[in-house]
Image (cartoon, rainbow, N blue to C red; front, side, top):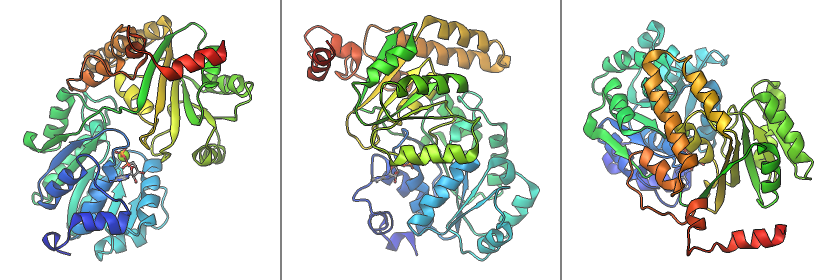
Length: 413
Ligand code: ADP
Ligand code: MG
């Protein structure tokens, strides 16, 4: 299929079943089809995968997708196969590697998912030399930057690999990167600075709120009574997740917990139950959430501060992906920050400054008397209005009456 004879919107409808492109998707796809390299910075849930999946269907050859986690790759693979995209993963967990290589070399794959450490091996380079490569898609591209919040040294090895294919476009995708990190990502991956596309970070349907409390557990258990629908509560340790789940279960709400210390089968069943549920509370560590496709999460609460403001944006961003009203409520106490600053000292010196800035940004988010959304958006380089009208501080500001909160206060009185 020659890109100029096929309309991307047509593929969007027929293959993916979507009515319209969202946000900057179309712009990103157009650049890619024109074989221009791009760094796309798009919020969580914006539909980054579609950008390379759709491009892969229109370009001649296979799109090599770099992804940092096997679990994430397998989720993506299922989703791609479900709409009829010819996709495969090449990981240590796959026992069909010979078949995958054969499909790759015979041009029978639209997408091949690999981890950066495999992509950078000599074996893989030899394999690619015999493959028609259409596109390099680098998912979670912030991992390439030491300034990013999740540096993965293996991402640095991608550049030499891609440089072997000077005519193959690159599409780097990330949800969270401040201006400094963006420049670094583009440079590390050999993408021209002019190839960066940043879409808005605002999630207007999410209502942000923050509570400073020494008893986070009971504060959350009681707040949850006012939150209908399914939601996630993030705890800072496995042990706390289990205890908090027990506490919330006592309120009569259907509750499960999830953390990396559980048997894989127990994790999978807890996750499946949550995805199918309309009212369950999932109490989890940060191990939960990446790659989970549940658009109707109605609330995300944090019992204690997350790792950084980027992490907060990503975790709270799992609420309300369907665009309907949702709540993101962070419960914290000053001790959380002392601990985070203590841990900072264990980081390599080169990273301390960047990490400190992330903790400081988080601390302005919780301490600001002004708009929470404004603090969040400014961190990502946007210039938001002073008041959003949909966070606790804006709603408490003089002259603003929030009907739902008034109703809730009456009900709980
Ligand atoms: P991201 O990687 O940016 O966090 P995903 O690629 O996982 O987001 O997509 C999030 C959800 O949005 C998926 O369920 C996907 O099918 C859906 N989606 C993507 N593009 C569109 C679109 N144009 N219209 C409607 N839904 C879309
Ligand atoms: Mg993604």
